[in-house]
Image (cartoon, rainbow, N blue to C red; front, side, top):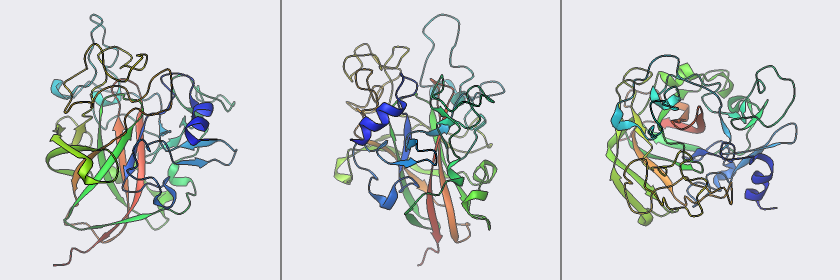
Length: 331
C-alpha cells in the first residue's frame, strides 16, 4: 500500500486531522537514512510505527488543543487568518496570536498530538475531535532508527525548510538545545527557548525539489516583538490560505478562486495544501525555506534543532526535530 493511502486510512477523518506540516531540512528524526529531505510533496512521507502497531507520519507530531493564556501580542501585519464574519474573532486565542507562548507537550512533537487522551483522562485509545489521536509517544522518548546528523559550523549561515499539507497560517521559529548528559530524552522546551535562532538576511524561499535551480526567493516577514521568549525571532508563514474560513480545503481546485488571506509572495504560492476530495495528498509540491544564523558563541558538540509552527487557524502547534553537530568554524 502506498504510504499516502496508508496515512489517509489511519488518520484522515476531516479537514482538521488530515495531516498538517513538518520540518524537512535538515534531515529529521523521522527521515530514516535521509531518504526524503526536500523531495517534492514529501512532508508526510516518512513515518514511525508505534509500539501498539499504529503509524505516525512525519506531519502528525504536534500538540493539539493549545491556546495562549494572555492577550494577543502579534502585530496586525503578521496575521495570516482574518475575521470576516462579524465582531467575533475565532482565532484570537490560537497560538500564533502570541508566538511561542502557548503550552506544548513536547518541543519535538507528540505522535497524534493528544498524549493524555481526548478528553484528557479518557482511557480509550482513539482518534480525537479537533485533530490527531490519543496516547502517542513523545518524540524525544521514541527510539527513532538511522537518524542522520547534520554538521553546522559556529558562526555560519545555514538553511532549514519545512513542508505544509494543511495550511493553518501562523508562523514559526527554529531553536537549538545542547544534548544533555542523559541524551535526547532529557531535552525540554525551556532548553530550546534559551537558544532561539535568528534568521540571516531578509529573504525566504520555496524550492520545488532538491535542486537550488528550482528555488524562488522573496521578501520575508520576520518579527521579534511580542514573542516568547522575549526577543526571539519568528517568521510569518509566507503561503496564504484561501480567503474562505476553511482556507480552501473544500474547494474543487487547489487555486484560491475568491482570493487569499493576504497577498501571495509569488504566482502559485497559495491555497490550503490539500483538498477534501483527496485528503492527505499534498498539493504543495515545494518546501518553505529560510537562512539561519548559527551563533558564534555556541559550545561545540551535539545539539537538537526544533522547528515550532504556531498555527493561527487552529489551536495547534507543530514541532519537528533534527540532530545537529556544532563544530568549530575553521579559518
